[in-house]
Image 1 (spheres, rainbow over the protein chains, first blue to last red):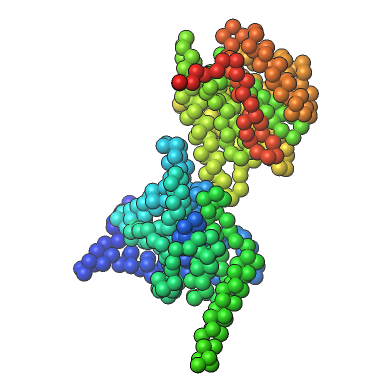
Image 2: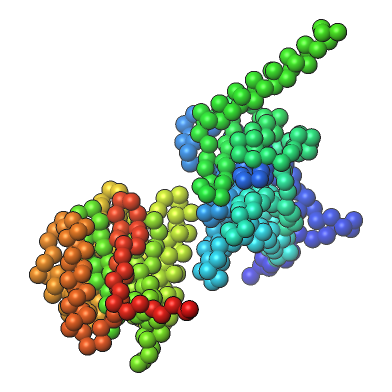
Length: 249
Length: 202
């Protein structure tokens, strides 16, 4: 029987794990995804690459629920995502069964990251080709959180972050424009960040808002279009204001 | 001595269970809730070995929840009943669970339903069912007074008649009962019937 258990992810002489870095390349080619944490909501957004005419758009849901109070979006290999999401969902229920408590966002992030790390240090397997943005509310304190994991298995908490295609531009935008927001303002910030890199319009963006009371809510295309229109109007007003003052000297 | 019974009415299903947790001659508590809410529109009333009862029903509850997250839609009542029976059957000749179950649910398409699942994985869809010594009295009472499509008031009246029979005719009758209902608005607690209040610490 041929050996199928040799390590595939091994160190290079200068200390790199090339398989992990190549996995990050796969992430960089994935859909743009953004997450923003507000004081009472967390918002996830992802670009929707134009669906083929014959494809049923509803079967391609990129923002998924892991539990009543946790949601996830990922960038990278979608098939790998299915496996990871399935394991995470099982862990959420398993945790509830054994300790009679829902998971915290940190716990499930740690679990997913741990799984991603395991696949960088096991024989015969390759790393998962995706980074995830995980949002949710702590079941007892009600505090909202946003976490990111990557193929190396590293994870950290963020106020706002982006991953996937053009994530650097989105992150730059967020760094420049982030402030503590709540409700609709948080949604607007997420959409504005996505619009930096994605074609404008409700049919190119998928947005989901999570609140403590109502859980995850996917926004309808019409709602997104309305907010995009608001943003465009604000942008136009700002442009006009910039041009007006010089005439008042 | 555990009594569980239930029936299907007009657009709803109702289950009642005694609430005593007994070990030999000692009553641990008389407000033990034996009817677990499986999901928004399903109830499981369980009786049997206490450890198995909680372990098995919670296991079913978490698996039903997992199905919903994986598939985006909830299980139908008949599917949940068959899943439950399947788990009992698989475990039967290895590590069996001594739990008797009445699974009540409401589906938008098919309305209310009640399933009788005993500890050796028998599955029957029924309009009325009961487990335990109390079944001798509650089934007879239901045979006499039940008719298809009862209203909530009529059904509660029948449930109370059954509870009265059990209290008066069963030698070690449980003092308290809990009644839960499931209809289009979901699964929820309906009422308690207490004749002995659990002592509250001062």
